[in-house]
Image 1 (cartoon, rainbow, N blue to C red):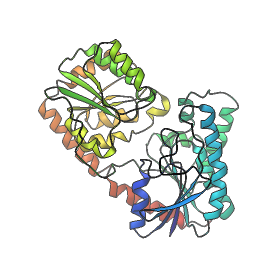
Image 2 (cartoon, helix red, strand yellow):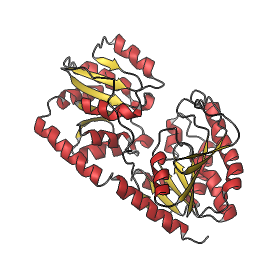
Image 3 (tube, rainbow, N blue to C red):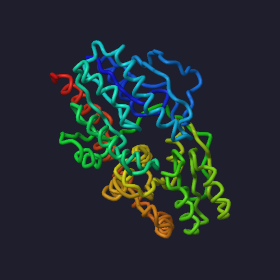
Image 4 (cartoon, rainbow, N blue to C red):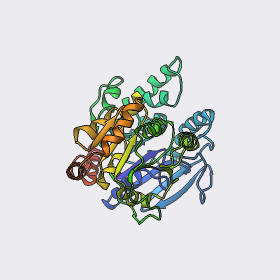
Length: 398
């Protein structure tokens, strides 16, 4: 069976598709990927790649077809929109060159839902069964980027959502809360397939967290969505000199947060910068508590953060400055404590309460995390479910 993934991102960009696609090759499938030249998250094509109209390579048995991207989309809304349009236009051109013999088209949806339109085009023109696995929910994700909820944008988004999901022969969602939003537009069966922890290369990090201190650690992208401004203010208000807040990552608001920490005279907030993915587990297990923080936003609150799985593997209590799906996972499974993202005083109290957790409480978190990793977030179980859906979709006659 031949599977064609349509995706905005692929290796060397660090996403779950890099684990799924080669795994399907190992299971005997012929797998190809249609994507743009690698440029996430900085909006600049990676070294070693040329931003040419078309290129072809093979990675771990997966044939990868790439087309040009519009660079500079990270800092410009205009270029971001141009890039979305360009993806659809070029994607339609390239997919016509490679769709012969394809049994299933699999849309790996991160970012704009418009990336699915080349797949919809192929389904309509060639009657190829098509499915989608969605990690971002429209229209919420669009408004989160600051676009206004006004006509004609609302009409355009409704059109795209109905066109894409209406043309899918199977719909998988990475968060259960996505289903309600999709059902507002189409009446279709929706299956839950959450993220899993990628088992990649691991190594000991040169970064060593401060000894003799209680280490709270945040890892990942540093932008407005991560709500670190309120986290830093809450940490200052908590007045916990025995604790250190470690921020491991980089992003658009990093300098603002550094300035805030300096303004508040916080010598126990340490910015370590971005570290290689292979070092993340070692950094997490050095920590006492792990920080999961996101702004209060309708779209974000429907998302199950991918970071949860890496935190679960580390087996450390989680302090969630978060609402919605992420908060539910933490509270329902007793993985730590939570605070409202907009309440600095509550965040401060949360830091203090985390530091009072007993060794028995911490041991319970380890046990609960193991149950989740072996059940709900088990890699083999999720991939088996996805594989079964692929077979079901391939068997459909359009």
